[in-house]
Image (cartoon, rainbow, N blue to C red; front, side):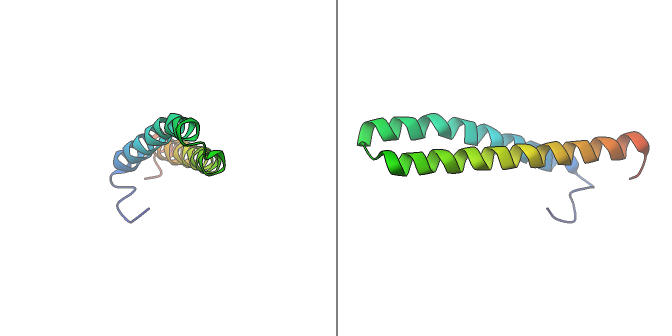
Length: 77
């Protein structure tokens, strides 16, 4: 995540939130593409990848925020 993560942690939190929002916005697009083109296999693979990345990013966001909160509450920074 880089050396500046702990000096400016809100930047990485904001980036994760934007990425999560983009992943959520991508899911309806995959459904529309599957219905319009009839290529269900490709759209299902895209939906699966988007859901996987959404879960991964949400878990990473949770751990980054929890670590930042713990460091700020307990004065470890």
